[in-house]
Length: 234
Image 1 (cartoon, helix red, strand yellow):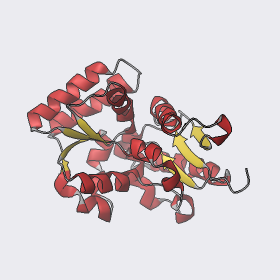
Image 2 (cartoon, helix red, strand yellow):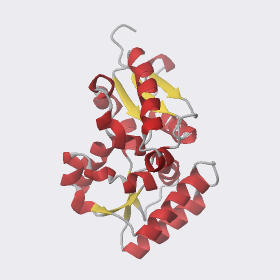
Image 3 (spheres, one colour):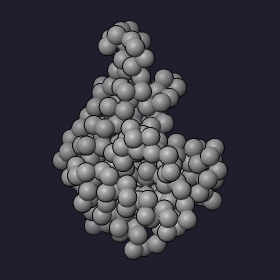
Image 4 (tube, one colour):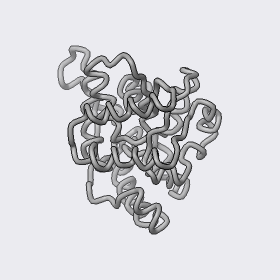
């Protein structure tokens, strides 16, 4: 269709998270229409991308940066209107990339910060060790404005959360035990909400949404994008 706006998703980091995000977009935008009216999306999912945390901590992100340049070049060449990098940790390197490759990117960090500012409720930051180490939520003006609502866990809990990502969500293991673990963390911090600041946690938020979990809230920018798809593409 002439003039149709297409979303580009840089996935593969990890593959199950970007696949789940794709499903969420379609599930939120069916509206009883024919399949020709569904959102148009280019999913660029190459699972050989270097591990984000390992690259940041071991080679200063050089291998990851080179991969992002290659893959963003391919997505931009596909004529997409906007790009979502389905990996929070990769956002720590965006300032190092050419503006010509990043100007279409929808910032997951900024979307999260905006939602926190609307909710005005403290939430536990659930992220990878790479994101914690690089202080991802200090990287933009909007995120800095939302700092009062971001609770960064203690170091031992940061490692525990990283383990939930790598030992449970990335391998595609059952999600309910992850929910129970997260609920336990929230209880310890006296909180009722968490920030899904690793896209692997979209597997958890999808589970919570499907089961209408009422005792725990979350901020997940992937759901925000799916539910405001046309607005995001503007």
